[in-house]
Length: 131
Image (tube, rainbow, N blue to C red):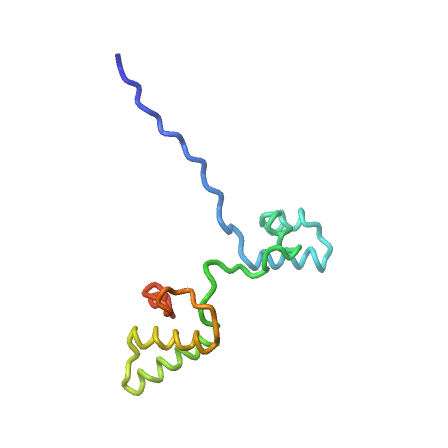
């Protein structure tokens, strides 16, 4: 007889990830803390997940959304490094990849930060993601 073709199982649509802005979340937190609005009403009014609002209000989750691994250098160190690169380029000495990575390694060693790299210095992916 005829072989029945397998029917593909329909996938459930994925839930939206971060379907709200930080501004809406901050407004909801302010409404609950300062205006006495209930958490449920604030979640509906500002169109944010109630469970997330509750976790942020309790302090279980940081108020500022930060994704990905932690940065190796502080914002001040990154700014200083960018200024150094630009100053070297203005003087006619462009900073090459090896020079930059070696300098970052020295900064990490000088500030006694935990180095998460096998070679002790950032690799290609760090270099490509650097501002």
